[in-house]
Amino acid sequence: MDARLFVIPASPPSITAALMLERKGIPYRRTDLLPAISKLVLRAAGFPGVTVPALRIDGARVQGSRPIARELERRVPEPPLFPAGPEARAAVEEAERFGDEELQHPVRQLLWWGLRHDREPLRSYSEGARIGLPIGLAMKTAAPIVAISARLNEADDANAQAALFALPVLLDRVDALIAAGTIGGPEPNAADLQIATSIGLAMTMADLLPAIEGRPAAALAERIVPDYPGHTPPVFPAAWLDPLRPARAST
Ligand SMILES: N[C@@H](CCC(=O)N[C@@H](CS)C(=O)NCC(=O)O)C(=O)O
Image 1 (tube, rainbow, N blue to C red):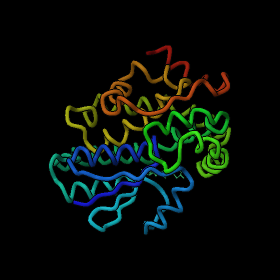
Image 2 (cartoon, helix red, strand yellow):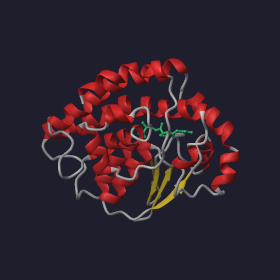
Image 3 (cartoon, rainbow, N blue to C red):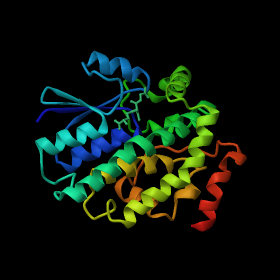
């Protein structure tokens, strides 16, 4: 099988897709892209959309973490990413949808809000990536990339505050999925791989970590993505972190 995965370093769904390929034992080459510029490269590579992860596999082009999960499951059924029973499958698919549509974006917005206020941590998120130019040089040209990415992700003050407000509820939902056995089992399914990466990214942000560590969600991320790249030191105004405080006290 000839597979090439297009990613942005430290992007949760990109890491999800890489983990799925690894779980299926499919060897692949990885192309690391800079945010924003990724859109031009993906179009030039013949993908219809402009987001990563994007997978070229034996000539076929598949984009998005959920379509990639299904394509890999179709091509290589074992080990499965989805349970066989219809009820269990529906539960995993719903958890995966939640991870993709509800959890992923607020975490991404918080990262870009932070980078907009301090670009320096971007270097840590690119560790180990091959972006086609030395990281020092990339950092010097990062200002427009960060500005565009923050704008594209609508990482403004209102949305960052809304994301911080939503985070405890999202984490409770992940913990509940683990308690129900939908995710967190010994063999990671598509929802585990989808959700753990967003939690992993959230845990790289110093302001968010206290609200996550000690939760079952944290243990899931530590197991599935133990070396999540990147670190953002405290960056949010203290008052914005109020919604996270009850969660801290209860853990
Ligand atoms: N929900 C989609 C998300 C795709 C997405 O928004 N990816 C981001 C990276 S996490 C992206 O490609 N952003 C373009 C950019 O940053 O320029 C999936 O899971 O595939």
